[in-house]
Image (cartoon, rainbow, N blue to C red):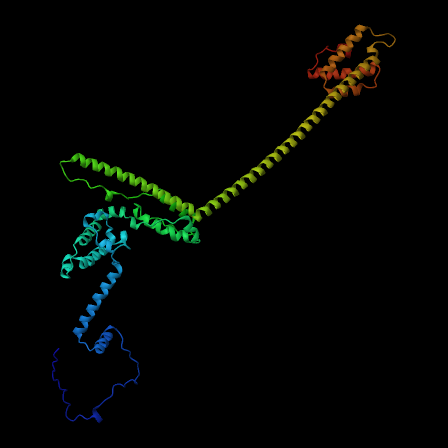
Length: 449
């Protein structure tokens, strides 16, 4: 960089100017403060690096760029590279369906999780290493079979449909379910550690996403039941087209083509059925080993027992209450029956007493007639005709009287023995009955004279 100097002299002071008389201070300087400064930042580090290694700006930038490139390559190597199997390098490119496409590209640890960008970067890295031109330049006499395997793997994995077909039969991505002994030996948390990856691997085939997680021993009953309900009703997109027998492209042999297609369809259906049964057995095994299910069943059983005991206690209380109520009702009924019986007895006694009183009163009235000699002269005896007539009139009179009136009549006539005493009483009561309309004039004429 070229520096340009421009001379700018200060203006001259006016004539006669003197500092002692013309200088005027308009302010004062603040006192000095001591501060500690520390050189930091990327620019200082770059400056220090250049000074230490005696580099120019351009040299330092070039070396830093090379180191950054190497760093990026090392990062790629750690992410998408893995040791290459010598047997894999000798594969026949014609048997591309039998190869592990992810292993060919060094993506075994990623598999179905590998992104398209990772696949492209892995392809680029493998091509740089195994390109036929590079090998020829290095003097290698190996053929290009593995290079063709790389190309085929990339072609399959970058095609979403074909990659999905390969992922459908990629057994290397499966996780072997643990045995019952392995779970028992691993302790209380072994079930979740061993079975969790199994269900994660199987969940890649689910049409419904996200898939419920296995959880842990703290998971509640609702989430555990939802997990197993999901897997027992698992809706899988898994297909087996990748393992189909190649259909001939010969248009002249259409029957053979249809035969192969039907054969492939039947084989896919059979494999789908077998896979569904396999998954069902897997879920059954997990359910049988899940201690949470046993705990929930124990809790449910305890709850049912508690409810049963409560129902039995309630039924017993209800039966006791019903028995007590029935006994109380029976007791009340007995009291009512006894009261009714007593009332009937009392009524019967009252009726009998009333009948006895009526009979007694009749005897009193008849006795009074007899004592009065049936209203004839005491020196003579009353004829039977007179007696019958008077007794008939007396019966008619008595029939028209109430029990109380009869008792009053008997009381009024009791002790009277002469015609003069007895007849006026009969006359009085006969007159009342005639006035009430209960007797007619002349009905008891013999009695009243």
